[in-house]
Image (cartoon, rainbow, N blue to C red; front, side, top):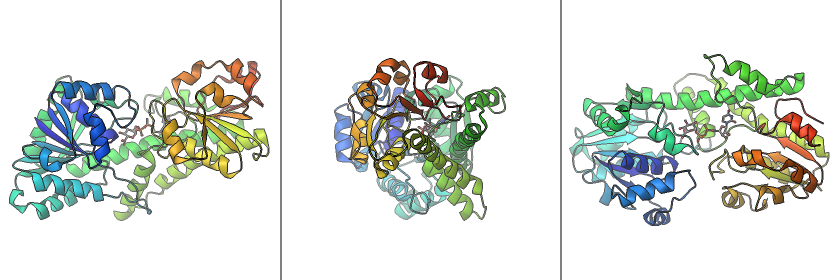
Length: 437
Ligand code: UGA
């Protein structure tokens, strides 16, 4: 099938590469010229395991190309994906201007029957607006252009695998034509028995927000439990194990820590809450989820203050700057929220991240970055684990302790074992577990 993907960010580029690998002929379009020229040279504009290789492989196979011009890519396409950003406006509403522009651009250059697919996360009801935008642009193709919603469930850091081995493919379609095209598009995955769920469009749109909000709710729930465990002497990791062993609850997304960040959960929670309000339904639980998430950084800061007393003349080392492991993405990273608070209180802050150093530095120029974890810890009064990169598990803790000014570790991701930290002579503050002070 001839497929066009508008937007080559995390969702768009992964969509391009994985659909090409399923055998489709894909063109990725982006208005950012520098992004397009680096993609044409085989360079992914961000770090995502396996993605750059897959992009190059598909380009060499002649199934994937990139252009800045929708006018070149859209004519003749059978399916056009909208994968543009939907950032939060000041009031929390999703800003859908890029979605509207993409829909109008696609319609303007359409030459015949075409399915326009929303993949960006959008509030329920957006497809109606997309349809109206298409009609304004091309009333002559009103019955040939169809709209569908096919929300993306990929996680950064695991995006390629999530797309090629999905828990489910969700398609909301307004017509049999759109439904049939989407079935054909995903046939290679459906043939491998990955679940294919068909709904109406608003249901698909709402289900995506419902999933992200529920996952964020799970994280905030376990983080609230961490606060209770810290006050009662209980161990949140053990509580989460007990909860997770109940098949009705499940073990995933019950890791207490610095909280969620990134480009999805924080904005999606706000947008979902705004949608509820607009629909006349009050859903304060969603505001609570966001509030509890903010508390996680406060609680970590309290531990640092408890260990160091005044912060003005102290150095705090941050292990991990990305919002989660296996990505260079620092958007709304809890690590950077903590760095800003520490800098405001006068501390000297040094960070290390295997992939996100440059992005972190451009967000916070006052942040010093170290070339590796050992240099990051060197001379620090406190080391804070902010992102649970696997490679941090194997650090030589003796070497770290000996190089630090004070042997204090605040573990914002419960990466280390409290007993071995105690045995190693650290003053150790985990999250939601008894401290070794
Ligand atoms: C999330 C969803 O997991 C995807 O299904 C969805 O497609 C995506 O948003 C999106 O809407 O595009 P992502 O933001 O890449 O994916 O990352 P997650 O793995 O969900 O992690 C989000 C945050 O929660 C991270 O900061 C992570 O450290 C934190 N987290 C996760 C916890 O604090 N505890 C946990 O137990 C799990």
